[in-house]
Image 1 (cartoon, rainbow, N blue to C red):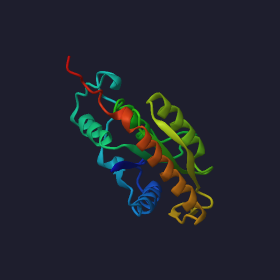
Image 2 (image 1 turned 120 degrees about the vertical axis):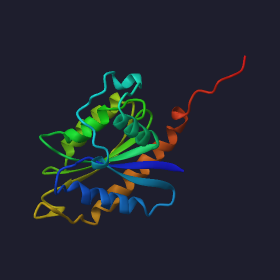
Image 3 (image 1 turned 90 degrees about the vertical axis):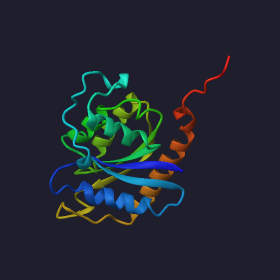
Image 4 (image 1 turned 90 degrees about the horizontal axis):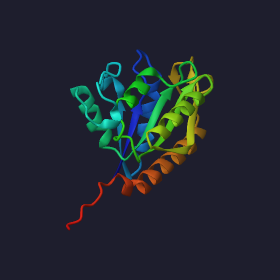
Length: 192
């Protein structure tokens, strides 16, 4: 069964992202065609990138990196829940992404963003990063405005109209994750 990780891209105290990520997970978990797991970056306290070699070499030295790599490698695709800070994604999410390389390759990714303008610029930032990691970013995005989807900018109350966008995003992530599966398989060895 296809496995999709929902990454909660904020670790701030009183973060709005936790409510958003739980909403995504609750909606996604109603599906029977895919297994979903919520990945909270608080559970993976990664210091600023501290590996001595580039992630593209795949030679991880630190135990925290190895644990993170094992977790990410176990998924076929991702939904990243990102805030928008200063026209970009959160530093903690970017750092977590930068730790790895091959574990992201040939996997689909969709974005659920939130912020003053729905987090649109954070998602655009992540699309550039995903391209470099050989990820297939899906077209559909769920962009949640702090002005309309959060009471007092802190209590998440999504409008029902967001459900169709989220369902489409999940459909696309699952379809692309499935389509990319052959690229994630190790090359078959043949006997001479």
